[in-house]
Amino acid sequence: MAKQHGATEALVEQLADYENGPFTRAEKLALRLAETIAHDPNGLDPELAAALHEEFSEPQILEIAFATAMFLGAGRMVAALGLPLAGERTRSRASTRPRRRLARAEPSPRPAPRRARQTGSP
Image (cartoon, rainbow, N blue to C red; front, side, top):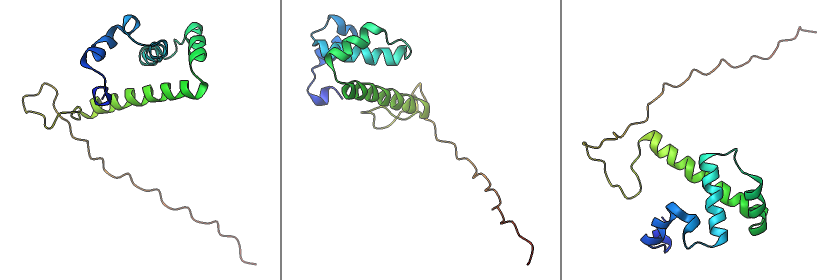
């Protein structure tokens, strides 16, 4: 996806060591927040929080956090359902990760409708 938005292969490779890469302070902070959310969601230290607030508004911080959560969740969903990854057309039968089909669950029985209480006749 980054390449589709103009990032070079070299820049994408430098993400693994983003702290020492050619990224701006804001980009490094956003990546640090994303890494924290991914690996230790309870570990947002006060220094990082203060630096984020120096660089970003509260809505911007929430946007970075939400985008991170969406990508993490989407990745987990793709893995859990055995869906093909972006750019894959079909999976070979020799694939080490078999494609799974979603189980078809039996419909759950609907509860009987509640009957209105009958009151005595006048």
